[in-house]
Image (cartoon, rainbow, N blue to C red; front, side, top):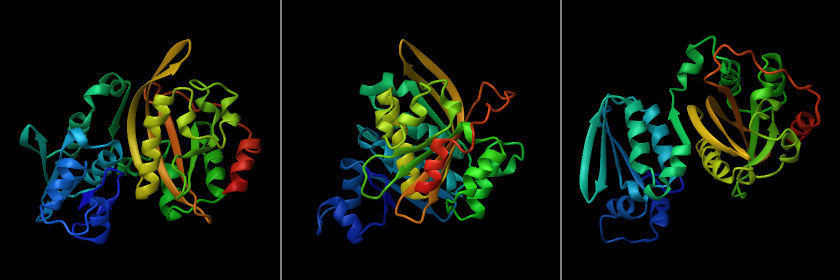
Length: 300
């Protein structure tokens, strides 16, 4: 399989691949060309035991990287081989999916944006851990998502209220023809890094318009990837967010879940909790009949 720079998975020699290549009748090694020049990542499994990830790190964009990392997490291979171009082709072998995910992120970190990349660090985690740990606060949402086959309805909000998850919940909406995801709901537990009024004024605005636009641009890629692939993400995140006149430094776990709706809009829920406050009680619940919750229920 090949993942494009936009995070779309394609099979070689298909019309979709040729369209992404921009050449309907290539007389050269089109797969190698796409990997080396267009930022594609090739993912190949040999005998269900070895997976090979081939890429040119300098040309890989974040959507392609996220899609490849997600594929590594879901792959059952026992060994992973990373083949990458750096003046010449090099290769590394690992038996740890977590190591491979981190190594891919390190290889693809843009040198020109090293300082910015250091502000936002994501450590992908195994999604199954949410189900295995009965004490995980996000488990009720994950179970609801699985049992409902990812179909969003008003009971998602009710569940969040019942399990005291609403204050740390954010809901994002993405439509097929829209370029950027928009806020549908922001719980008041995020007021530690957002102005309290932003909880309502941001509804309908794009994530790119967050006060820290660099953080908004970075976070937006994850929402788009989850909505596009229909696959959840469970991560640990370290972020330094601009919060004039100071900065807000945080380390948190997050769960991203994609939900289908009766319309063409895909909703992505974010639930997060600080990692440095394991024993901290959940924030005080907002009124479940608040304006923003009612507005979300109507739109969904």
